[in-house]
Length: 445
Image 1 (cartoon, helix red, strand yellow):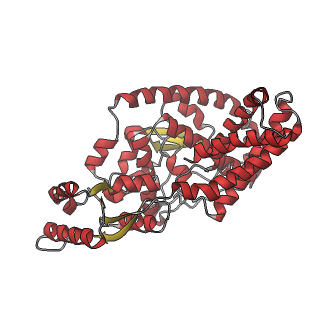
Image 2: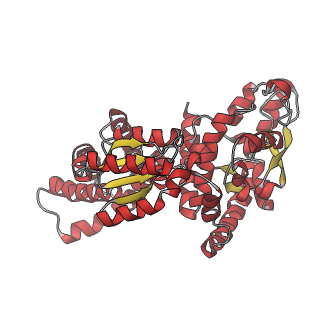
Image 3: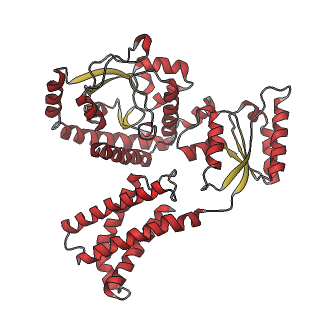
């Protein structure tokens, strides 16, 4: 809806610009001379909006911070439009048309997103109850009820009974009473709960009473863009790994072709940077330019990882009793990391096929040994090749580095599982574009 609205706002702004500029509704001939250059610009604008996150599901359009983001993105679009005018001077003339267009387009975007979209997207909220235990269910309940953009509201949170003589009967009673008490037409259920699974015949009978049953894990995934680990089991992994699907085979082939092309040309171009990195590292501490580490790749196979050295040493994850490294990030290394330059040598590993441009981050074997013992289904992230960038790298705020951190790694795994389930060329492109956005922000700091 946001994309369509933006397209209409951009197109309407062009018509209004020509009307204002020439004092009358533009003729077909006048429109035809402007359609091509402005169509190119609009496509670029939509792409910039996408990279900036203006179409993210989590964006609350009425929030002041979101309005500030829209203004900053529009400033970037204006700069691109001006550059486009000077690189293709014959396509947009006179200059006043471009100036008037940006004034009108910016106003139209704010009118659409801040005033109209909340009205268009709003709907009468349906009453619902949530059935499930655990932190993920609690997060879902709190988030939905604390965000006005969803079409339902949880009236009650029923937690399946586990300590009772007859937990199934007691849970069914609680659900029945909650539905009657709240007059709810929707039940959001954690199907992976042991008691809920046993009560499935009761839930089946509810659908004949006009009650809609929704999988809580799917709702959680759609809202948070990650998989709730408390709702994951062997059955989920078998159903969603997608290792034998024909369309995934096509995707894997196309992805490999893209990996080879980008890694080859990117690797060749990156050679220009190598001498500067060498000089910077040698000037700081005279240590080695590269480090080599073993990392766990697809199907648990070991991958030899080569990176520009960014720390004072290389302990390969053998942290001892402290669980943390004794080495520190160097000043040069801090810059190499913030710009991702330290990972450029991995482009050659992508060429060998052991890694991909996009995928879960590769982990040290010593840490994998710990996490596989402490985190259920951690090894599921090894169903696909590791990548230079990935869903968890761009959306998980707390990356555990150079230390054992089970809780943060659990959160990271929830994003990795989302990627494994939903991986596609479209998702890979989105990850690539968002990675570019992050790099540009870091370089600009």
